[in-house]
Image (cartoon, rainbow, N blue to C red; front, side):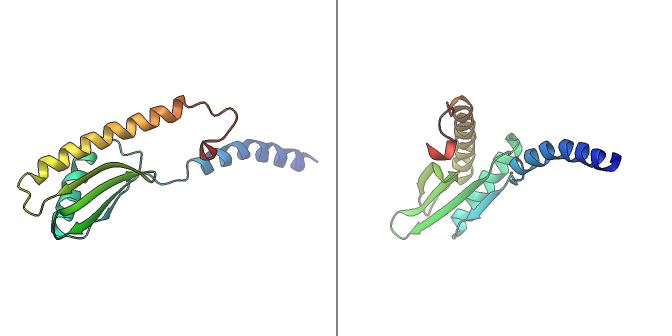
Length: 131
């Protein structure tokens, strides 16, 4: 009887911890590189370097590139499937590092703004994914 009672207490203490762990199981801090060209890879390198230096990276991002022979490369940065940054980079970019640093600062501010909006969003009737 005592073992059953002890087991019940352990289970009651473990369940809230397990539920909290499930909510936090998502791995964060990734910046996925889906670039193709040399310009895209350089942009990703400078962009990721700036974000790692200035942010805690408690979010995930995807950097995508779509090269175009006429216009250069279309670079986008996505956060939770939303495009936060989109820009055509011409093939002869001389200030690529400055552009990537400015993009990293802009994306960091947008991510903070989106997180704040989620915290202030009223979800009493519907869950976030139902809105």
